[in-house]
Image 1 (cartoon, one colour):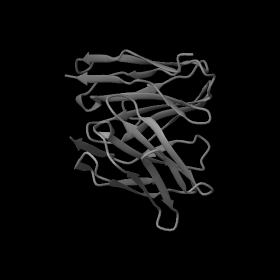
Image 2 (cartoon, rainbow over the protein chains, first blue to last red):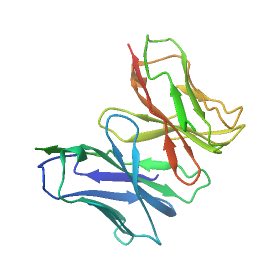
Image 3 (cartoon, rainbow over the protein chains, first blue to last red):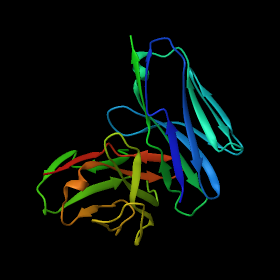
Image 4 (cartoon, each protein chain N blue to C red):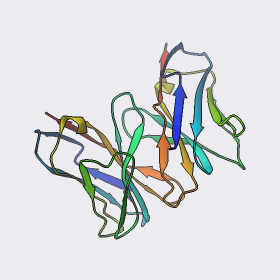
Length: 112
Length: 109
């Protein structure tokens, strides 16, 4: 059974700090790993990492996939209060329906 | 172009009642999904569909049913509501990437 584990489950930091969120996975026939940010409503897409694209960056956010260790990290530098959210990691296998298996999420709180 | 539309946004059900959560997408996507999210948890797949007339169970299908008579619509049916079904429900469709609806917050009392 495919499985995704995120750590830490909760993190509280001060504005301006740098944070690293972790995601480890077990999936049959890995296709991709996705990061989402969830505030009050639906998850919003951040990054997709695949075997051919193991590092992504957008502004203060970046993510790396380690296929050997079956894990990924999401880094946020110079955090702002608007970064407060739940960050979800999900993996997709090479099965026909392209279903996502999600981790529990990391609740990140940025204090001013 | 509305994307994925879910109705209702909120609902309170009594134990044993039934209801249908509606999901409609206007992007002509073949793949559609229903997920539930319990407090402090990630999303778990209930049912999915790869096209009209085709549905299959996900990780947590018990207590739910779905149908997919058209490409656009993928309703989720709860027949006998139980407190364990209190959750936030997200519908999603997929082409190149996932598009999520805004969610339905369901409370069963």
